Length: 57
Image 1 (cartoon, rainbow, N blue to C red):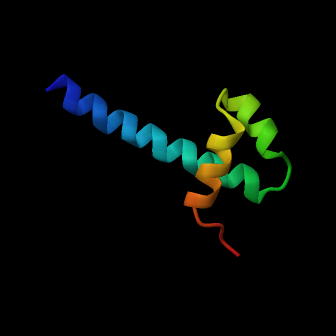
Image 2 (cartoon, helix red, strand yellow; image 1 turned 30 degrees about the vertical axis):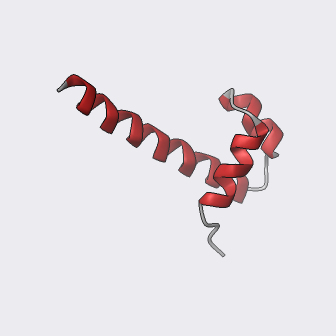
Image 3 (cartoon, rainbow, N blue to C red; image 1 turned 60 degrees about the horizontal axis):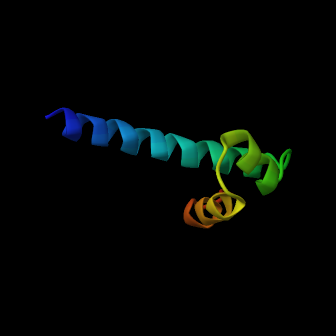
């Protein structure tokens, strides 16, 4: 049961992280490289998420 609950928590965190990356990119105040450094993930991961999350016009 704990594994199931943890899976939902992890999924929620992943979605929040993706939304945060989208907002950071939309603000045009930081580069994908800076986001990767701040979140301790690869630049490739940031770019992958940026493609996955639609940017609002």
